[in-house]
Length: 507
Ligand SMILES: *Cc1c(COP(=O)(O)O)cnc(C)c1O
Image (cartoon, rainbow, N blue to C red; front, top):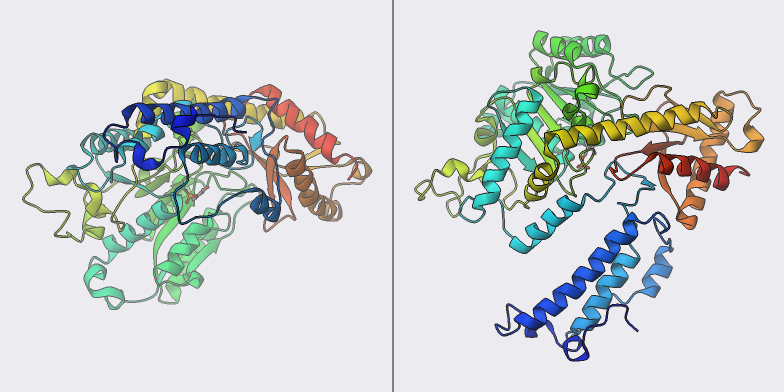
């Protein structure tokens, strides 16, 4: 028996009875889509309901057994398709639930979601103005606004499928600027071993550039970070000098603004001085921390000097809460992106079109087709205004500060890895009753590290909260809590802390 019942005569119809295959199918199409809308809106309601679980965990084999995923020879009817939609969402983790703290992308911004619905309906490709006129203009407006916020006049930007690819675009542009012949002549045009530098806390996609682009990961040098996870500039300089003395060519430095695990901000001005001295491209990976550029309160000192960068990665799908996927890469230099990646495909980018072909942005990227990631961001930005985004950033940071403060009031139960986090990442251990009298040190950390996966397992089975854990170079497993959902409130933080205690005190 279905929870979402179509009238029987409609339920037994098939896709070919609806628009656009059947031009007389308007009425049935409306009935079908409004039922679907009911399923989706009920999911939004459940996602927002604190009495609902974040997830109903099933092991993969049980999940597989509980679902009918088969692709048959014949068509299934509309009622079955709606039931499939319902079951799919019923088994989905509610990443927009205010007690989902597991990922850098949390929350379900309703307006951004509405934008994504429209985007899906328009179903266009973003390579040329001729098939996406309004969306292309929206890209211009939003990306220019973002570059102004960074502190640049002019420049160029593009939306990419994720921060990892955005970082790759920065790498490609940097190499193109230093060795413009590389594009035609390939490897032999580079007169030596290129070397790039990044902190040992950076996102793994930076290292992947070295592997994908022919440097080899041995030539992506990891610069040590301080105890708060920030790159040590004197170490950067030492390592650049060391590589230069071997005859290598240092050309690219990545500074991270908001590291993925600890939320640390590398000191941009000190790093920029070194880049100037040794003629290196400065890229800032602000995929995570970028949103804080929008807050007067939190922008400084974290982003002080950001305008000195040559390129900046900034993911609106993280702190800003735009729906997945939405990632941007910005360049101070205008024209570089196009000259680096342009292939002038005859069948897409004809120079003799009716309109100014600089609007055919598709030739700036190494992809051909591009998903429309702009409309949901543009619509969300309209809905909030600049002030609304600032309020959102201050809300998320304020809640994180509240969480840290509450943990400090319960030092027997919670041990913070960093006493003063710089972003909404709060890293900590939960301390079960039996370990509360043990002095904190490497020995206790080892035991606490082993407790993390067990406690996480209980969390998943219980379904009331989700928080991630991981080890790093300095520590065994620890929890990393992320508050990046605008719907989260103090009561959710209180609930989270109480739930750790309820699920973990006897471990
Ligand atoms: C998330 C993240 C990335 C990668 O972004 P994707 O959109 O997941 O590819 C890169 N850098 C940092 C610092 C990140 O936190």
